[in-house]
Image (cartoon, rainbow, N blue to C red; front, top):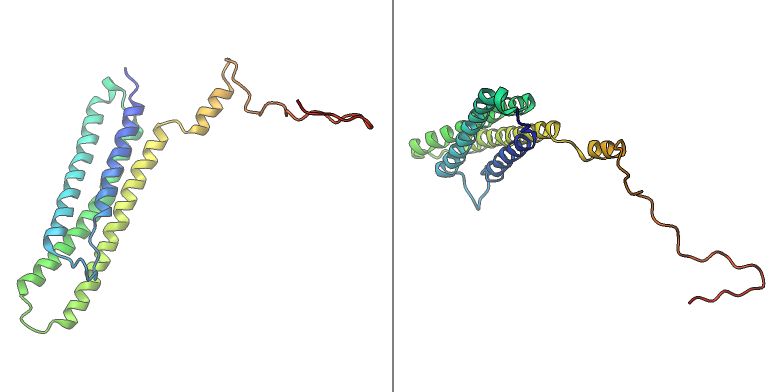
Length: 189
C-alpha cells in the first residue's frame, strides 16, 4: 500500500484554492460600477457546480481506492465535509439568480423603487451567505490538509528525537575578545 498523504493534502489545498477563486469573483449587491446581472451570477454558479462535482469525484475516487492506494480517511472526510457549505453557497447563488430573473422578467413595468431596494437587500444577504459558505468550505479543506501533512512543529519534534546528530541552533561563541587585564591595552588585528 502506498502512502498518499502528501498528494491528498495537495489535492485538498488545490480544491480550497478553487473555492477561494469563486469567492473572489462573487458579485457585490449595490455596486454601481458592477451592477448584478444574470450572466455574472450564472457564471459563478456554474463554476461552483463544477467544484461540487470535483468534490463528489474526490470522495468517490478516494473511497473506491482507499484500500489499494492508501488514501487517508481524513482526506475523504475533508472532501465530504466540504460538500455541505459548498451546497449552501450554491443555493444562495441560485436564489440571487432567481431574483434577478424574476426582476428581468417583470420588465420594470411600474416604478419598482420599493421593490428594487428590497431586491438589493435580499440579494445582498444571499451573496453574504454565499461568501461565508465559500470561506467555510475552503477553510475546512485546508484544515483537513493540515491534519494529513505534518506541521513544521511536528517535523521539528521528530528531528529532535532523531538519533542522527543535528547541528545546534545556538549561534557560535562571540568573536568579541575578552576584557584585558587592567593597565593593559588590547589592539585589534
